[in-house]
Image (cartoon, rainbow, N blue to C red; front, top):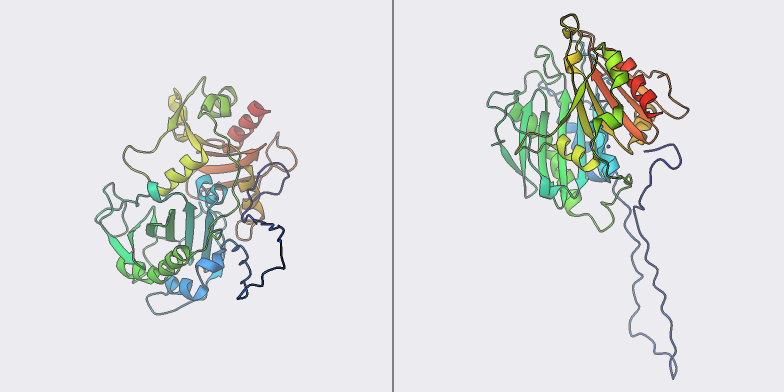
Length: 383
C-alpha cells in the first residue's frame, strides 16, 4: 500500500495462536487411546510474494518479440501517486518484479528507457466491489466503456485489457479478494519500446502463467495465510479546508482566495485505485480559484492535494525500500525528525509532485506551481 516510528501504525497480528488446555479427573485408571492422536497442525504463516508467484511464473511476462527472456528481480515500482502505495495499509499484499534499470523519478520519460514492471496487488474483502478497468476499441488506448475482453484462468473469469494509462492488466475477484495484475512499461514510446513487435493479445497471453499461479495460490490458501498486517485506520471527514488550510496555499499560488472540490469516483464506475482510496479514506482536494490571466499558464488550475490520514508510514517505505530509495528526497520547512518528503518533477513541463509525511498522515501535492511552497503551507497550517 511499513512503519519505522513507534506509535504511528497499529499492526494487527497476522496469525492468532489458540491454546487449548484440557484437564479433568477420572474415577478409575486412565483409558488408553486405541490409536495415537495426531498433533494439532501449526497455524499457517501468511503468504509472501514468493508464495503467490515463483520467478518461473513471472519470467514469461517479460519475453520480448525476438524471444529474449531476461531474468526478473523482485523490486518495488516507484510511483508518483500516493494511492499506488496504499494496498498494504489495507491488510493486502503488494508485489512487483522488474527487468531493465530501476525507475527512479517516474515523471521522467526518456525515450531510451528499456524497462518493464509487473505488479500483483491483493486486497482481501474486495471481491464484492470488484469491477474491471475499462478499455477502448483501439489497441493500447483508454476508453469509457465496460471491458468486453474476458479470459478464464485457473477456472476464474478475469477481465483483461491494455491501455496507455492502465498498462496491460488482468483483474479478477478471487475468493473474497480483489486481485489486480498490471504490466507497466514506456507504452507511449512506440519505436524501440520494450514490447515492440508484440500485440496486446500476445502480451496478455504471456501474463497468463503469472495470473494462474496467483489465482491458484490464493484459492488453495489455508486459514491465516491471507491475513497480513494492516494499518489501524480511523474514519475522518473529507474536509479539505480543515485538512490542508487555504490561506497559506492561496499565497503560494498567488491568488486572493480559493475553494476546494473533493474529487469523487465517476458514477457507476469503480476502478481499483478508487476502491483502494475509498477503503483507506484517502481523498483529493482540487483547487478552485479565480486566477489572474497572467497566472493561468502557471498551472493554478491544475493544483490538487491528496490527504491520507494515518498513512505516514507509507512515505517511510518510499524512502527506505530498495528501488524507491532513489526517489529524489527533499527537506521541507516545518518538518520534524522522522518526517520525510520526496519530490518528482517532469522533464518536459513544470508539473511536479511532492509526497510527504506530517505527523500520522501522508499528503500529496500535484501542481505546475510551487509544490514545495504548497506543502510547506500545509505543514504550517497543521502545526
